[in-house]
Image (cartoon, rainbow, N blue to C red; front, side, top):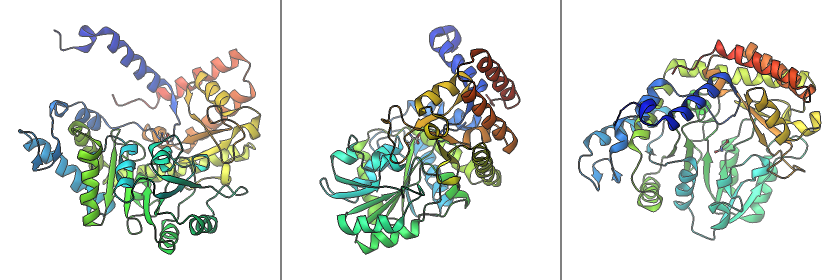
Length: 414
Ligand code: DSN
C-alpha cells in the first residue's frame, strides 16, 4: 500500500485539499478558531498517535511509555510556567471534558451550580439544561445587564445570595468585556462557594497579561488549547491546590477518559513553548487592537455592537436590530462571500438559538495570518456591502473575488 495519501486514498485526499483551499481563500472570523503553526501540526501528526498510555507520567498501565512520559511532563512544565500555576492536567480531550472533570472534583450530583447562562454568553457546560452540567446538577444561570449587556456583579451577587450555590463558574464563550475574577471570588467567598474560571476563549490574553488572571482567585481554572492559545484541539485543567489536583487527575483518568492523546499532548507542548515567546505577546496585542478597530468600524457604520465595543478578541453584533436580518441569514450571506463567522444568540434574544439575532466576530485566526487593523476594516466594509446588496448575486460574487484576492497576500504556512 502506498504511503502517499493522494495515491492510497484519493477521496480523503480530495476532501483535505478542498478544506485547505477553503481555509486559504476565506477570511476566518470564528472567534474560537485559529491557525496552528506547522510545528504544532507536525507534532499532532506524529507517531505518538500509535501509543497507549493510560495513567500519568511514570504511573502508566502500559509498557514503553518513556517517551510519552517525557513529552507529557514537558507539556505540564511549560503550562505551569505559562500561567504561573502549580498543578496542571494536560490530558482532557476537550474543554467540555475539562469542565466535567473540574466540576466533579468540587461538587456532587444534585448540588447547586451557578454559571453564566448560555444566552448571556456562557458555555453549554456551565449549566445549560441539555448538557451534563444542567442534568447532573441543580443549575442556575446569571445574565448580563439588559441595558448595558455587561456583567452586573451586584446582580450576580444577589442571585448567589438567593441560590446559595456550592459552585460558581465564571468565564464565557461570547462576552467581549474583561471579566473581573476578583469580584467573582468575593461573591464566591460570601456565599461559601467554590469557584471555577473557564478561560477557554481568553487564555492567550491571560497568559500574556492582556487580561487579568484568575489563577489566584479560583479553585480550578479550565481552558481549551486551540483558541487564543493557538495550539491543537484539546483541554487543560489548572489549580494551585495539591489535594484538588489529585482529585482532578482521578476525575480525568479513569473518571472520564481512557488513553490520553499523546500526539495532541506533544502538540500542546509545542504550542505552550510558542505561547511563552515574546512574539506571541506581540501577536495577542495585535489580536486585541484588531478587534477594537473592527468593532469601532462597525459602530461608525451604525451597527449595534453589544456593550459598545470590546476589551478582548471578539465582539457581538445584534444584526437583526442593525440590519433586519437574522444571525442565520447573516452567517449564510457571509459564507457566500468567503467570510466565515458564526451566528450567535444575543442576551435576551427573541429568536430561537438555531436562528439567533446576532453574529460573533473574532480576530485571533486572521491576525495569525497577518491581518492588521487595515485588513479588518476592509473586511468590515465587505460585510456591510454584502448585507446592503444581499440580493445582488453579481455584486456578491465580485465581493467574494475581492476576499480571495486579499487572502492571497496572507497565505497559510502549509
Ligand atoms: N464552541 C466554542 C466556541 O465557539 O466558543 C466554545 O467552546
